Length: 375
Image 1 (cartoon, rainbow, N blue to C red):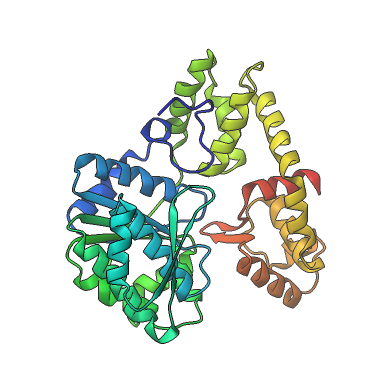
Image 2: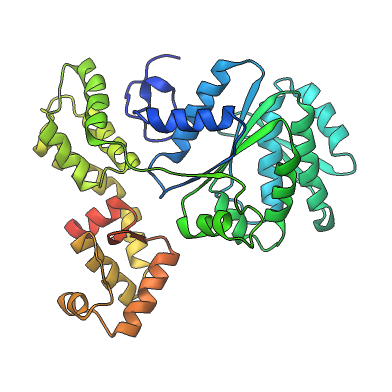
C-alpha cells in the first residue's frame, strides 16, 4: 500500500505503521484468541476498540493462511433481520473470494430463502439480503454458523457494538447465539461494546445467556508518552517535532481519547507552515470546531431547555461528581432537582453525557469544547 498523505488516521484501520501502541492489549487479545478463549471488550466509544480489533486481526491473518478474521459491526442494526443480513454478508465475503463459488454455497446453505445480491457503493463488494420469515430467523442464524463451520478455517469473529442485540424487538437472540457459539469448534469470538452497563449486565448477570462465557477486558486511553513518540515519528517526515508540554496541552483538552487526539494530530499535520506549539493546537481546535459547528448546533438545539442547561453546565466544569447537588445547581442556575434528574436521565439515554468513576462528563469531547467556548 502506498504511504498515506496524512499518517494520522481518523477512520478505519490502515495498517500497523499508522496504529499507535496498544502493544500490551494486542498481545493480550492475540494470546486469548490463539488459546481458544472468547473476549468481551468493553470501553467507551472513540477510544479505539474497533481499530484494536482490526489490528489484532491483521496480525492473526498474517500468522497463517488458514485463519479467517471476520469483523461484524452491528451498531446500525435495528432488529434480528438486519443482524442476519450483516452477519451473512460479512461471513460470506470473508470466507469466499470467488463469488461464483460463494453463490453456489449460499444457494445450497440457504435453500428455500430468497437471496438478493447487490453491490455496496462504497466498497464495491457484493452484499446479501436474505428474505427471511420471522419464524425462520432462528434457523437462518444457525445456517450462518454452519457456513462458518464448513469453511475448514480457524475463524475469529468480532461483533462490534454487541450490546445492540438487547435493543431488538425480538427476544431470544442472545440465547440462540450463545448456544451456537458454545458448540462451534473452529471459531472464537470478540464481543465489543461501548455501553458499559448493558455489556456488564450481559456478561456478568447470572440470569443472562452469556454469563461467564468470555474473558472481560477493558480499554483505557493510550499513555501520553507513547502517543507523543508515535506523533513525532510521523511529524519527523515533515521535519517537525512536537514538544512534550505542547502535546500535553492537546492531550489534556480531549482527555487522551484516541479518536479526538487523532483528529487533532490530523489537522496539525495539514498545517505545514507552523510550529507545533500551543498556539497551533488552539488554532487546530478552532478549525475543527468551526467545521463541526453546524452538526454540534443541531445536537444542542434539539434538546429541551433543561437538557441544554444541564449539558452546558457539565461541559463548563468538565467533570461533575454530583449533578444533583444544590451547590452545582445553584451555581449554574438550574431548575428543581426533579427536573435536573429527568434531564440527566435523558442526556444519558442519548449518550450525550457519560458517568465515569470520577463523575459525569460530556461524552463527545468536541461537543464539550464547543459548549465551553462557543455557547
